[in-house]
Length: 382
Image (spheres, rainbow, N blue to C red):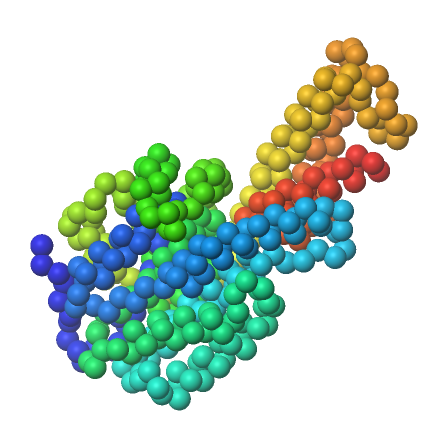
C-alpha cells in the first residue's frame, strides 16, 4: 500500500491540522504505532509528544512515591491538603501540548527562531509556574522539551499540508482525554483518539521483554488495567472521536488505511469553540459525579468488609459512642453490618448531592481513597 500524498498546497493549512491522542496500557503498542504513523504518512508532518520523554520513568517513579507519602501524611489533615505532584505535572504537560498546537496553527509562517516562538515559550513558562512547583522536574526542563518539539515542527523548509500533533500517553482516565479535547476545541483543530487495545497478559509480557531501564513495575500495569476507563461515546463528547485498534499483534496496512480515513475526516471536521456546550457540560458534570460515587462505593465496600473480618477475628466491635463491646453473636455482627451499610448509603447520598466534597480526583487513587474513608469515619462518629 502506497503512503498518502499531500493535496494542493494552495489550501488553508489550518484546515489540515489535527490533535491525535493515543490511549492504552503501558506496553500496549502506543509508541510502536506512533513510529509506524511517522514512517507511513511520510508526506504528512507528524510531531510526536511523548509523556515519557517529557517526564522520564525514573522521575515518574519518584512522583508516585511522593504521592503515596503525601496521602499517608494527610489522612487526618483535611484543612491543609496539598495538590499532588502528579496532578500538577499532568496540567503542565497539557499546557505544553496546548502551546505546540497553538503554534502549529500558524506553521506556514513559523520559524524556529521567530519572535512568535520566543513569545510562546515565555508565555508557557509563566503558565507552568502558575500551577505550582514539582520538586523532581523543573519548568525549564518542560519548556526545553516543548522547544524541541517546536523545532521539529519548524524543520521543514516547505511546510506539509497535513500536520498531526500526536500525544503518546496512557490517558486511561476520561478526564485525561477530556483535557486534550478541550485543547483541540479552544484551538478549533481536528481531534481524534486512538485506543491501542492489547490484553493485560500481552502488555505484561512486552514490558518484561523491554530493556531494564524501560520497564515499569508489573504491579503498576495491573493496577492501571483495573482503573482503566474505556471510551463511552454515549456519555462523553470526546469519546465520540475514539477508535480502537487491535495492537496485540503487529500493526498491518489495513489498520493504517482505516486511520488514514479517520485523520482525513478530522482534518475537515474541526472542533468549534463557540458551540453551545450547556448540555455537554452538564453531562460531563454528572459523569464526574457518578464516577466519584461509584469509586467511593467500591472503596467503602472493601473498608466495611475488612471491618467485619476484624470484628469476627477479635470478637469485638467498636461501638458508635461507648467504646468497645463484645460481638460474639451473629446478631451483633448482623447489626454491625446493617449499621455500617446504612451509613455507607448516607455517605454516598451526601457525596452525590455535593454535601460531601472531596478535594482529590478519582484518578488520584490513594488520596481519593483516604479522603473518602476519612469522611465516612467522621460520619460514624457523629
